[in-house]
Image (cartoon, rainbow, N blue to C red):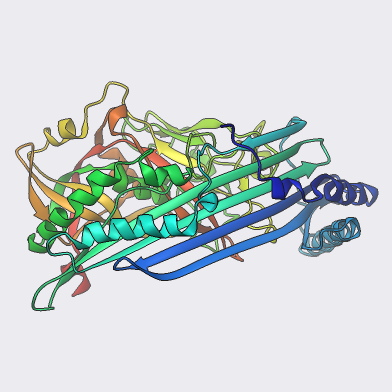
Length: 507
């Protein structure tokens, strides 16, 4: 069945509102104007020990007008779906641009907003790849699925409690600009997650084990077997949790690490994804979590990692959380290289940052998380590419005499330049003489970004590649959140410093 835009969204006066806003912006002398109307529905269902513990279902609808006038940005937003309101909001955006231009001039700056060129795409429609909209599934079926999974885990020996949640989002967006691009898009994404807790009989110790299934731009079919082996994962968790409870604490020191995609995606996000956002590299995004060590003067020369390191920015990846047809600058989305053979060769850009450094075109990274927020340069699906002829995860493990295999993401810490970091995980296994030899606890790995990626000796083959990610990447002030995926294979790193988290906490 072909995927279509929600009829209730199409029933809104999308084109009429856009025409009214853009006509007013043109009449007031805007050099560029765009109109964006969004409806974002976000819902959560929570269960505790197979019983409902909470639910929320929120929809935000509104529109925004953004202009370039007199070489400055102007932005305004509204919720009244009338032509007069759309024109009034456009006027407010122009007034905001005029005020911004005066402030810039008073500061002694002659900087003007320029946008990288982008052809008009005419009228386009794009819908993310899903089969069953989760919002069309009956409530009892959604809760029932989570309750059944929870009950299966609770029946496992040593499992004391189970928390389950499902987060679903449907994002509808209509965009039109003065260059003639008009896009109507719909994205659906889901995040199912279960966490089992074991408490020692004496009550003095506990630990948790979380499912590894990543969030995905899929529909309800993701929870019924498409894209993830839920039965296999739920069967494994009680035994893994029991092994984690009995595992010894790690001895700190240097280890070879084999890191699974379920953990490595977050390291990619923090040390590559944010570091290669051009606004950070140029110092334009400094207040929220810092800038970047990968400054523009190092483009083409920075040795980011070993020669097996190849990283792409991708706004088109199937089921990617940052995947869309067109961004909030009206740019058709693309795939491009960020790191090639270990060398920094690209950045993530929007039309403004691309023009600042003379790029011919943006690579489509503008996004706003709400109709009330201005578009920002946001992260693409930044992914480490597999070796087309690379080994499986077992093959990587077989190369290690003494090391640790890591699965699942945990806590993390990284400095403001995305350079010094520390990451934990969910599951840790000793590697002895090329084989797994039981679980460990309290593991964290620490390095600088270039040392870590420079120590990557091998990446796995396509069969080890998994698209991980997060619903909650934060940026900007006022803060915005965006969903983003990061694909990667399993990878082998030599002699990485491992810390014992309990010892570090006690210092």
